[in-house]
Image 1 (cartoon, rainbow, N blue to C red):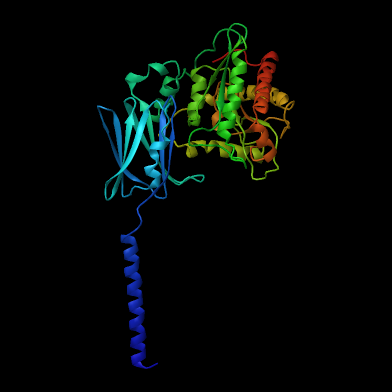
Image 2 (image 1 turned 60 degrees about the vertical axis):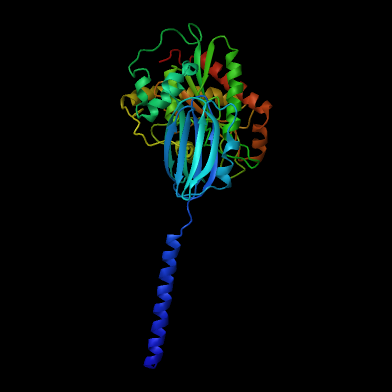
Length: 419
């Protein structure tokens, strides 16, 4: 190759490299701002949650205004789009905290949300990384201020959520060493039952082929069961949630302990990768590892609810006490007996996936002193069972079976005193 050809080729190579370098700089300098891809609002009595989902983390600042009460959120480095423009249509009339939401372009680099409030709130913000199909999320939780909670005094949930957010959930719970409540449950006092409809709010649970959401189905089943229990003269029932709201797993357990429940029943309708899987199952806690691969898989998916629903890593200390392990061994044995009674009656109205109570490390079953079971009512991933789960008739049948199991457990000499 001649020197002139060599220098010409080298010059073109350098020119091409320089052009590519300048192009990369240009792309960096003009990178598209993060866009808000979705907005969701979940109103509930205890708190309202607003979620902004985006393909990249959002930079924001917020402040409150009075007369009237407003929360202002400036989303920096982004521009108004159709999603933000439509946020006002998401507000529900029954929302106890949000009256109206308006969106506007505050300046060239800032989109602004103005949230008109029905009452003063304490706003709590969370930034959540991508998980389970969700992209980056900015979560705003609006809690009532201390002076406006008279309507919630009979429900411990709000106080438990506050303690949880402050990393001290055990603060308002009964002492670990508290003596059992006097009297025989069902004879001298009511049997206290805590129903736990799984998932809720940001966490839909499993979703069937026809878009049936687990969180909706299990809430309906729990309401059927609550109605049945309410008619029993020797029973009293509570629910961890009675709305489409997300409650952290530890708070569900804490509410059962706060109400000194005799039994805890978590209700689910899970999915599996194989749509042929079908049948009802009952699970109890294992402190020594899962009794089957299926139980281990299910516990992993259920324990991921906090990541999907959205909680802060607040360093909560609840259930980190070794003393609980001693109490829990006896409780697990009671849970297995209770689960067996429920499974026996479920088998009269539904196909059973397994005819014995399975065990794994379910976080929601970790009350150390309350027999606790998780009931998988059916596989929502199975098309036939999804159709059944949608019918009030099957929901009522499942509720009746669980109640029959409760009665059978106590009739056979189940736990007779509550912590």
